[in-house]
Image (cartoon, rainbow, N blue to C red):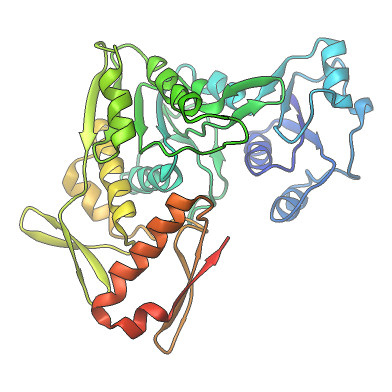
Amino acid sequence: MRIHFIAIGGSAMHNLAIALQLNGHNVSGSDDEIFEPSRSRLSQRGLLPGEEGWHPQKLNKNIDAVILGMHARPDNPELLKAQELGLKVFSYPEFLFHHARDKKRVVIGGSHGKTTITAMVMHVLRTAGMNFDYLVGSKLKDFEVMVRLSEDAPLMIFEGDEYLSSPIDRRPKFHWYRPHIALLSGVAWDHINVFPTFENYVRQFEEFIALIETGGKLIFNRGDKVLNGIVGSSSRTDIEKIAYKLPDYHIEYGKTKLHYLGTQIPLKIFGTHNLMNLSGAREICLQLGVKDTDFYIAIQSFEGTANRMELIRQHNGSRVFKDFAHAPSKVKATVQAVHKQFSRTGWWFVWNCILLAA
C-alpha cells in the first residue's frame, strides 16, 4: 500500500509510519514542525520530509490511505486535497482498529498507569514467547518501535488513550478499539482542555465500557472510588467484571519484594502505584493464558518504561530519577513512592533522591 501521513512527526504517528514501512508499505509524510526524537528516527528510516510544511501536491489518486494526526487542523491543505480526491482518510486509532479487527484485542485505559501496565503485559508476553501486535505510549527496552503490526499475530495489545482521535474525529481514541479484554486503572480528571467538566470526562469511560465486546472482560482497580462507581452503575451483564487490588509486599533496604505462595519476589520497580499496575497486568496475563508462576518469574526483570520513574544516574548514595508526572495526582504518587521506598535506609537518603520532570 501507498500510505501518506499528515503530521508524521507526532509520537504515535512517526512510530506507526516506521512500523508500516517495516511491513513493506510505501510511506510518505508531511509536517510543519518535527522535534526529537521523531526527527532522528524518521531520518534514519528515510522518512523525514525533505522540507517542513504542507504540500498538497504529494496527494494523488495512487495513495491508498491517508492517516491524519492530531497536530493537523481541519483546514489543513493536504487534508482538503485528500478529501477532494476522495481518498480514504483514517485517524491512527481507526487505522489500528481496522488492522486488528480480526484479532483478540486487549485495551488498557485509565487516567494513570496505562503505559506502565501495557509495558508490563508486553514484557511478560514476550518472555512467554507469545506472538502479539501492540501500541504503547513509550519507548521500551527490547522493543524497536512503539507500534507493531503483523499479519500473523492473533492478539493486539493497545494502550487506550482517552484523548481525541483526530481534528475531524472528536471521539476518544480508546472508543475505537472495542476490546475483548479491557482494563481501567482509575479515573482522575485529565485533558481538561478537551473535557471541560468532570462529568463529561467520566462519561468517556462509561462509553468505553459500553463498547467492550459481548462476552468480554473488564478488569478494574478496586481501590479507585470513581472507577468503582462507574463499574457499579454499568448495566453490562454480558461481560465479566474482575477487580484487582494492591498485592502483599514489603520493602527491604530500598528494594520491593512481593509475597507469593510463601516466597519473596524481588522487583526492579517500586511504589504502590506501580504495584497496583503490576496487579492489573497480572490479571490481563492470566486471562491470556499466562500462569501466575510464569508471570512472577518474568516480571522480576521488568525495569519500567522511559520517563516513568526512570533511574538515570546514581553516585555516592544519591540517585536521580526522571519522571513523566504531568498531573497533580501523578506528582503526588511519584513523590510518595520515593519517600516510602527509601526512608527506611535513612532520611538523608530521601533528600538525595532528585526528581526531574520529563
